[in-house]
Length: 257
Image (cartoon, rainbow, N blue to C red; front, side, top):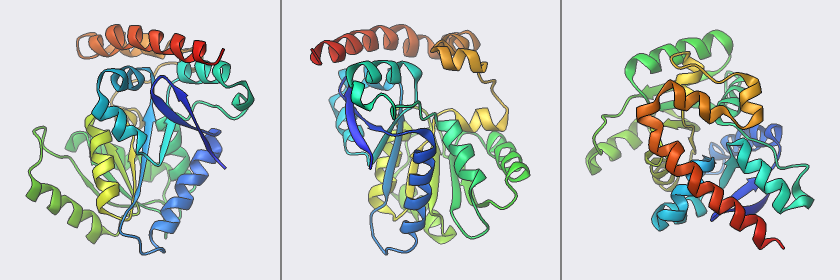
């Protein structure tokens, strides 16, 4: 049984990585059997998401309505373990690319049925090729790269119909923060699927962008690697985001005493 605990103003789902993978697979199985009209929204949040939730109440409320909100960043787990010691054993980093790999590794020829939404056509083509090379039993039933501009209502309805017609049970959404979180919430409210805001996993698993070395991921310095790789695009995310997150982390720790 998962529990939710706060870091900053985001309530995180506390569970180990392997349990998160199992939960997503179980939800996907249930989505094609239950006949529900609503789906399941899954978010992965890191220090930047916590900072964004502090300054944007609408975004904070959207994440709060998510069915699962996993700890995508190591600093989240550091703060969580110290703020809630009784949950320290289970509070692991549940990293989006690891979850996607884990779900694909356990996929069969019947379920889940994957749909890829986001990135560019070239990245999607490479991603699909690499995933099927590694996980030949996995079923990818569709993919699309939306236009960079906001979609119209008609376009969203057509998108939903394509996903419905494909028989997808999991939709992986890689549109960047916060756009992907908004789309996941919308999809889960519209379709009986598991919608997952997967961040940069498309680029990492396609091999179009490098991942930080494991030691940097484990030490909480992955952001330095990514910042050095794309300094102009990620400047606000890390300079502003990290400073706000630090304030939120201190507030969280003090609230426990």
